[in-house]
Figure 1 (cartoon, rainbow, N blue to C red):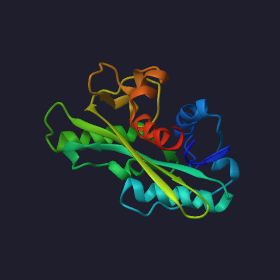
Figure 2 (figure 1 turned 90 degrees about the vertical axis):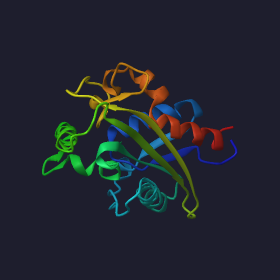
Figure 3 (figure 1 turned 135 degrees about the vertical axis):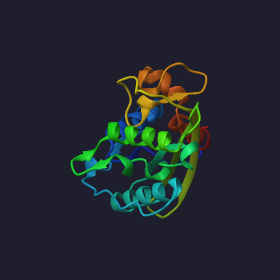
Figure 4 (figure 1 turned 30 degrees about the vertical axis):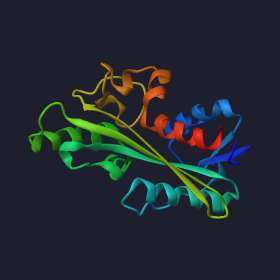
Length: 202
């Protein structure tokens, strides 16, 4: 390892799906992963208008609170016909009084494309920014993306978030129809993580 990030790493998320994906990606490297939720940390307010800005907020908050290195992810889907929306506000589009409803968010996204008269195929990208932060204030940034198109109606029951309406380029399946291992090879998060591995484990 060229950078010391173990043996324990805080994953600065309360999102179970993200935690599982990141834990799986880290598993080969012998890093003990603990979520921010397991420490009882509150979710910091994400006040930035970029993926990297919000990832930095989460990573540094967890690192300061725990005294441990912390990895945060900020990610979302960017739809060309909507000027990149929902983008950094992807989770916000799913917010309801009873928690996040991504079926509602996907419906809203498709309806916005319909209203805009968006041509087919409706190009979109899943984008991910990882920020690895230390208690002393240092951090490293790793970005990844995967291009694809929106499909309707939604397809598949695996994955999380917008996975049922996103079909990556070169594939006939949505992320929600793919086996976890297949998605894990090509996802935006996997692409960002490969850059982290190249910097920290080789």
